Length: 171
Length: 303
Image (cartoon, rainbow over all chains, first blue to last red):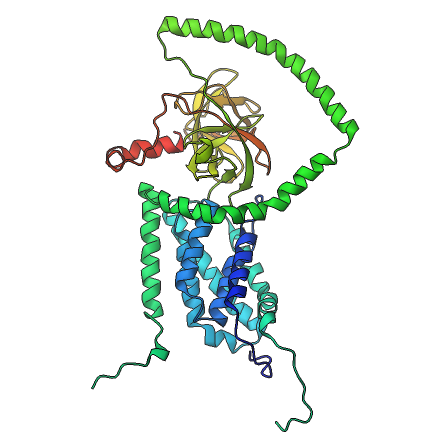
């Protein structure tokens, strides 16, 4: 973390990664009754792990989770999968750049990534003969990106160890 | 001598190669799904994976609805009970008439050698949640293939037609609402028997009665019921009330918008009716799909 250079993070637990992804998926499956602009938390958590753990989290897992989302939503089969795979690719490719910024500029990067993945979905559905659902479609991404600092804080919490200020240490 | 990187640096195929692979796979699946509907088995497997999560996610909301029922006061229950009793008495009269009419209708139909309408088993279901896909209008109900739900079955609630089952998972089923842009339903104006086809208008809450001449005999407030011409929906079910009519002499057709009479709130009870015997059903048989893909697609949409 560039913002807190004195923090050395503990290695991530795969169990925690899985749990966070399952929780995000469950959030997405909540009965959103005609509510537009609900943030796609799964996409956000996927981006987070692709940025922070690019060797553990990748395009393949993102693609599979996308298929689960398509099934649960009754969307075109492969629509979320394609968008999430592209999102994971971009997040992995940009992870060094993104991590060199403080949280809010990071959120701007994430906003662009999420909007791009929504554009992929929109393009696919328009090609398949859908109607444009209106600009509220993109509101979810903006809210997601605004949640990025919070998500970073929560998902990195288990990896932080308490700062031990040792006054007698020479360095 | 050739240098190979040590195992430590080995990270599999390049990211761009992976992305290309998965993107092509997605496109392949989308084409299969949109054009041929071959992706169903894979979808069914994933549906089983997602099912427990869906149950967990919707459980608190269902529990709240249930507990609200539990804590309803006795006076409210008694009031409701009295209202239902009067309603029942009122309905009983109609029911008695209905029995007689049905018998008469049967004998008349037999005289005409017309096909007998077989009243099939209706399946009772509840709406689990509305689909989150912003491009289509669907709801998910808690009955699936295990309970005998089939694609093409009409779904109604207490006030009217809700839509049609378009995809069946083992334990859940997807119902495309009549307000979906890709859904068409043949209707009839109750007042004068004028027939037409109502499509989802695309704005997500209304129906549009298309291809009606600008001088067509339709008024705001008219009730539309199913005409039963498609062999999919039984005739006479309420569909929508005409909300707005724009007659412009510059266009050959009037713009007629209707408000659906059925609602789509969560935990609402719905009834999955048996499909009419004459309805062509979709089958996974690949030979038939090639020959009759067009007819089956239109049958699925209900037009």
